[in-house]
Length: 450
Image 1 (cartoon, rainbow, N blue to C red):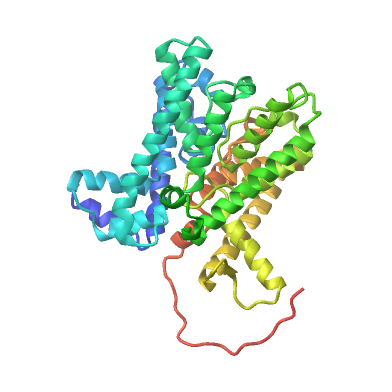
Image 2: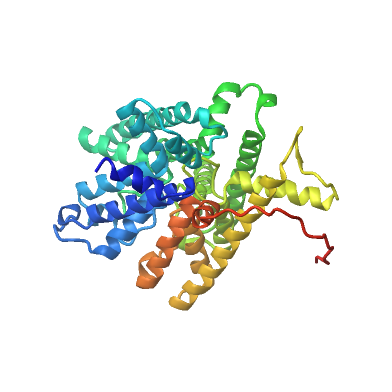
């Protein structure tokens, strides 16, 4: 058994392959556990379609569901879902690295490279220290959120201590890991007027979605923005702009909607709009009925879900860093500049190509998947596009059609969640077994563009 493990690991020639395989194995094991009769409230097997989709949604920290989480799954099933979300949020290789350190006290080169691919660290020498910081930071954030939510459920809603602690812990894990599973059929709509619940969940989702390198750098130099790296500047700047944009758009479009913001007082409207702007960053909860929002709000949500959150965090999407750097690339091209500069730093050409590649792959995948799902279901373009981007961006929001897209549609959405979690570029790298290096350059020729 011990000899077989290195031989199996040696079959993977690229670190990205280990990440892909790790997530796939986690989904398979999760589906196996959720298919057990003890995982449902009725004591009968949920069946592989529901178990596999739910496991994929949990590991890929999405939150799309086919069944009511609390009504269908037993306590065991809910604990499995929370565990899968925790594993998916921290990353398979992050947990594997921690387990390796605990068991052996040292970290091999192959494991360091694999962990580097998962955590997006810039130096392999930092992997061991960073992974331990990530796990510690995650557990501390979840513990703080659990305390706040538990207190609110205990004092404000009269829940027994055990039940309050269970609700607080479950939703803390889901909020920090951007998973979006809720133990109420309306998600968090019933708490739309409660700032303790709404703001705690929203802030926890923001912290988890910023990305661990950014959070750690802000902790060190939050008073000295001049010392921030390009990654931190772009992530914080783009995130702030998108949050402000989303809040203003939802306030403007939904202000008088009698099914969403209309019945609320002005202060609650602002809080609900802010919460709704945060959740498309892959957090997946909602305090407004998504199905009753105007199509213009759906379109704005589509954009926010496609962009997602920060790199090396729990959020999905193409990432705010990619979106922000793409804006700098376009601006430099429009000004006729041969180099892309961000502040006092120049963006490498390799990074520019990665930005364009990730964006184009994301747009292409969403477009093709939307076409396929339109052909498979009777639903309209607005709802199908929303569902596809939600799956790809691992956002977990839905207009209510998830359970009605058929088996083929569920398979497509599960694949989108998988690709969206590990990233198009990571999947592409894993599939490219051999990397070719050209030993010659071809003559250059100008081509008319536009």
